[in-house]
Amino acid sequence: MTQEAELPGKRVLVLRPDELGPSDQKMWREIRTESGAPANPFLDPVFTVAVGRVRPGARVAVLQDDGSPVGFFPYERGALGRGRALGLGVSDSQGAVLRPGIRPDARRLLRVCGLSSFEFDNLEAGQRVFLPHAVEELASPVVDIGEGFAAYRDHLRARSPGFLRQTLAKERRLARQVGEVRFVYDARDPGALRALMEWKSAQYRRTGRRDRFAQEWITRLVGLLGESEEPECRGVLSVLYAAGRPVAAHLGLRSRTVLSWWFPAYDRTYAKYSPGLVLQLRLLQAAAADGIETVDLGSGPARYKESLKTRDLRVYEGAVVRPVPGGAAHWLGREPARVARRFVRGRPRLTGAAARTLQELGRLRGG
Image (tube, rainbow, N blue to C red):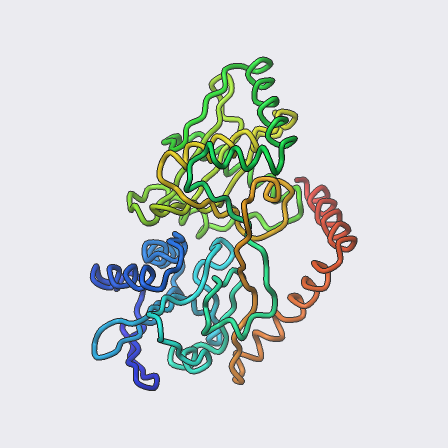
């Protein structure tokens, strides 16, 4: 279903993700490398193709110069041409993949793609085409482990000595009181994956948030990426066992050098042992030994992220909106809620009250 259009000086082909050929994927990765951007798995073509298999509105605009690709813009198209970042809601890094020096006008790009708007909530830093349309900058904590886990542990001991000491003590207590503690970095355990999804669904309901695993496309996407063998984008299921049973698990998405913290959860029966934190330390050690240089913890506040991080990346939330009916529909449907969220985020007392309200809603729903 290839569509063709023109930008000034550029030919644009709009493809379904499964229409990308091996040469397109190779060029995509070469452009990412040339731009100096981190090898984030969410901006790899494998993620785009996987989303295309579960989201019928997924598309890729391929920008060409003299017949050669110079850029790729993955997105999803909905009713009235309302567009959104590919995998919005589960993608922690979004944007276009453009050769240095290529900078199309955002609204013209949307027009040739048949979009009236383009919404993003984790726009990667350096996305100069879309950054002028960002309305909020968010911190995305990361853990640098490229120098090895021993160096990171020394950093953690100096920065958060109580956190490290208490977590290691809880792991020892878990082993004494429950049974042998075992960690598997890259587990092939369908039962543990089912347990993870059940724990996570319960957490979503308990905190009044939408259950992502109640959405079929997300569970299918997790299944596809969990089976992937692609070194630039594949799921990694890490599991902490005690007495032979899973007590915490994490499904991450990794490239050769970046691991994205994606779906962590634990069995609340063992909450007093902080099994999620025990798993995190074990995972960081194993990931460093496996060649991972950066673990991206993702945007959103959490006390454990502040304890573990070595620095923050910046990601951005916002939307490009064209002055057409679909653009107006986007603004009316999304912007008032976005403004309200920004207002609450900037006021800690309101943030706490909002969290308590969501938890109460979750309790009333039976979570």
